[in-house]
Image 1 (cartoon, rainbow, N blue to C red):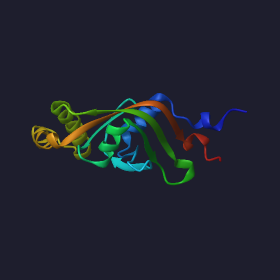
Image 2 (image 1 turned 120 degrees about the vertical axis):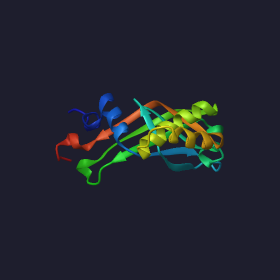
Image 3 (image 1 turned 120 degrees about the horizontal axis):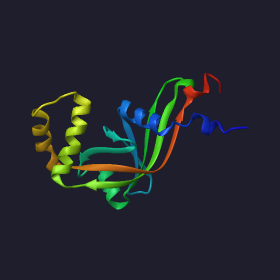
Image 4 (image 1 turned 90 degrees about the vertical axis):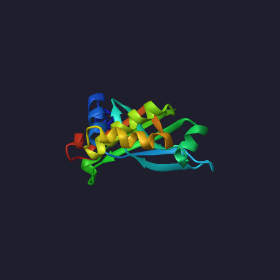
Length: 153
């Protein structure tokens, strides 16, 4: 009997499309007390590589400085037969180069605001010195798309 897990897994193309279409990733890093620290983040995806930017002094950055690994989750759907998602265990690069931070910030800002033109880079340029870029490179991915079950459980 084939595995139901395998039956609902997304292909790479499905996963990449899903990550492009969804809007919020939840990041789990390990807090100073050893417990998971969960926070949402706006992001851009390049295949399964997720990038975002955040304030350099944030707790998630402090956690990632200590342990540059995180687990990410992106999910969608309300009813069981609609549920889709991906869990990505990642190695994390903290980007501190201001030009690269601004590049990530510009991509994220354009994605979420729909803005274009010179005003976005100027706004980002002013914020970039206080921020870092985060690049999440998956080492393991688990995905699910319950729509593949055809309404059966």
